[in-house]
Image (cartoon, rainbow, N blue to C red):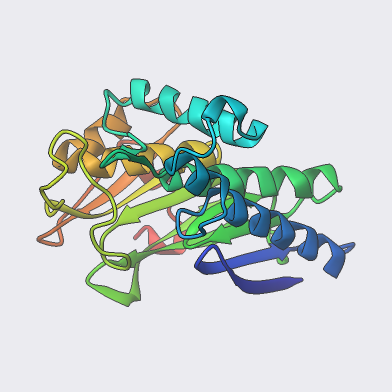
Length: 251
């Protein structure tokens, strides 16, 4: 059972390969994403994050989820040497950590309801669990940032997260906190595979902000692998990345 809906300003796709999949399960996941959007969207005037940015709500008095996101964002800022920072121009924008966290939470919701084989994809960031309907690992494509209709690598993955940060679709939406006015042009796409989508997403965002050194930062992180494409189309990948390549793509 598979369905795509537009939520949080992007396509969200859920596929459940278990025989007991129901529309109620899909509805529960999509309802969760609607809640996340209503809470964290900086585009919605009545969202919690908008109220915080207007000074109407203190973080300490915000919801448990909002306080958790602020805590996770600060942890990530410290772990990345400041390259991940949700503060910009005096306001908070936690979108760089919320999406991966929300996908991870949605996956946990499905696990709690007995699902063992599924994937959740929000805007190209994906959590895969178990196997697909054919009983083999899920396949995830890495798009060519210069031609989005072309797949440059196909991954065969299970029980992990795959996140891609880049400028080919959304433009310059990621910034280097140490040079916020300078566009990021060295790297156009950076894909990270992690133990879950939360880890993959937050470190992909920070590594992209680092420019050319980002892939080497990913290399140093235990349990994560990465694949970067620079502005000249040159790919650089971490030492363990190739083990995730689908067998018929490896030659």
